[in-house]
Image 1 (cartoon, rainbow over the protein chains, first blue to last red):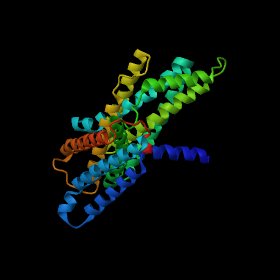
Image 2 (tube, rainbow over the protein chains, first blue to last red):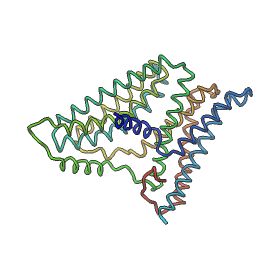
Image 3 (spheres, each protein chain N blue to C red):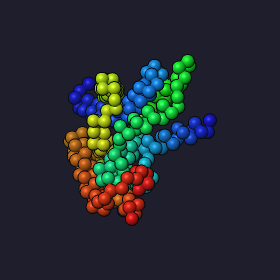
Length: 76
Length: 255
């Protein structure tokens, strides 16, 4: 039974997470957006979506850059 | 069903499902050609029924039980996580860091494995049934997830998402049945790249809506968000090519 549950968990986790740091980064970014959207500042609240977009794009570029540096270590 | 719902729910569901169906079809073809068609077809139908049950249970539960703003935040989070995974892998493939998905090689490997297991003609081919069931279920889980995510906005969106996924299945199965070989001509990496960017865009848009952000023009913001993801991915791929010009084929999880 535990191996079946383990298999289900592994598949579900694998569906959403390929790189742990990217997933954790995404959750943190979503958390920041949620906090920004909950603030009393109406301008921040209205622009929470754009803030999320900028943070996610930065996360993607930084994560891929890190992956590139890691790949370069595999070559050398 | 209006055109906007069709475009928002059916199109990404169609493209994403087509990619997954191509991968599942490769395995089912390998089983059918090496061991006969009855067992893999039964396995595939059983997996399709399992997936339909998953969509029915989780889709209906999500739409009816969870309040709309929470649903948008939940679905937005899942779409973003799911999309980032696809987008990252596609960019790494374009940069030559992760090997391109090769349906032909997967097909040959699967055929060799299945032949090595042998075939008892007297009994029901459980190996063929289980291999096909597992392949269709595992690839189909991603289809089910996408259908639930894109259909979570209501009954009309759910119908559109199911329509998109079913249409993709029909097209891919018809092509595979006509060609009787893996669909290697399908530009899988480009499709995964496009779908990854689309999933991320919808994830950002819906999470933003869920937390009460204002998107100018509402859904008209989605193409702008999508363009931003495509631009960031292109910049990243160029960056990676300059970092590792000679390329290196490793697993996406290992970099």
